[in-house]
Figure 1 (cartoon, rainbow, N blue to C red):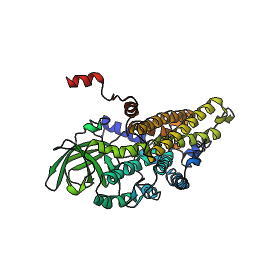
Figure 2: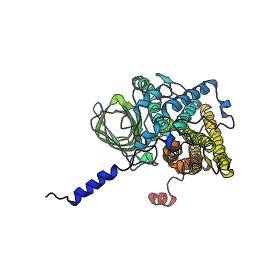
Figure 3: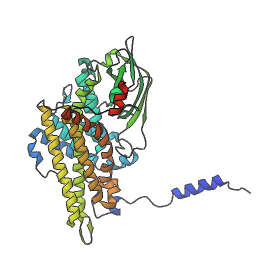
Length: 438
C-alpha cells in the first residue's frame, strides 16, 4: 500500500492553499465609490496660475506630454510596478513626446529650453515617476554627456538614434563602495593598443539591463584621473544583473554591472572627460531637471487626492467636507506652489548663466523634502486605499524615497549649498579629516 511521506503531504497542502480563493475583483467593482488612477484625474494643482509664466511653446509641450501620459501610460502602468517589470511597449509612445535629448541642439535632438525640459519631466512624473527616471537617465545624463563631452563623430553616431528612442542609453557612475563619494570610484581603465581595458563594478545603474549604450566613468590607471567611455551592450566581459527587492521605482531596471577586461576602442573614449570635475557639466543640468521630478510626483498625488476626497463619502458626506482633510489638502497645495516657483526660478538662473552648483543642489534637496511631506499627507488622506497602487498615491509614496536619495542625497545636496554660502566644506568628518593628515 502506498504511503505519503511528510514532504509529499506538505507539497500537497501548498498546492491546495495556492488555489484557495478567487481572483481579485477589478478595483472599480471592489470599490466603486472612487475613480482609480487608471482614469487619471484632471490637473488641479496650479492654484497660483503658474502656467501664465510659461511660453506658448512650453505650454504646447506640456499639453502634449500630459495627454500622452494620461491616455497611454496611466491605464497600464500599475501592474508593471507591481511586477517590477518595464513596459517596453511604452517606449514608442514616449518617443512621440520628442523630449529625449532635452536641451541638446542638433543631431535630431529637440533643443528644448531647460524650462521646457523641466516641465516635460514634471508632467511625466505626475503620472509615473519610473517613466520620468527612464527618460532622465537616458536623456539628461547619458545623452547630455555625449553632447557636452563627446567628439563630433560620437555625437553624429549616437545622438540621432538615442533622440528617437530607437536605442536606449544608461549612465554608469555609482559603485558599490562609492555613492555620495563618487569621485573616489575604483573602476579602472587601462590604455592598450587601439583602446582601453575596463575592469570594475557599478551599482544602481538605471536602464542598464536593456541599454544599447552605456556611458561609463573609470579611473585612468596612468593619470589617476576620471575618464569617460561609451560601452556597447554586447561588449565581451560586460555583465548586467537586475537589482531585486526594491520598494520604490520598481519599474526602473536598476542594475549591478560587472566589467571584466572589457575592451573599448579609442574612438569610444569621451575626449571631454579628463577629470571628475568634467562630470559637473552634466550634473549642473541634470540636477535642475531632477528637481522637477518631485514637483511632478506631488502634482499627481494632489490631483488624485483632490478628486478622491470629493468622491469618497463617510458619515454621509464627502471626505472633502471635513476640516482636517481640507487643511492637509491645502498644505499639499501650498507645498506645490512653492516647489513650482523654486523650480521655475532655478531654470531662469540657468538660462541667464547665473546658476551655481549650490543653487541646483538646494533646488533638488528642497523640492524632494517638500514632496516627501506632500506624498505622505496624500497617503494619510486616502486611508486604506492609500496603500493600493490602484489610486496612485501608494506608488508615488514609495517612488519618492529613491528620488530623495539619488542624484545627490538630501544631505549631500544640502552640504553642497552650505559650502557655497559659508565657504567651508564639511563632507568629511573633521576628526577623521584631521587624523588623515597626521
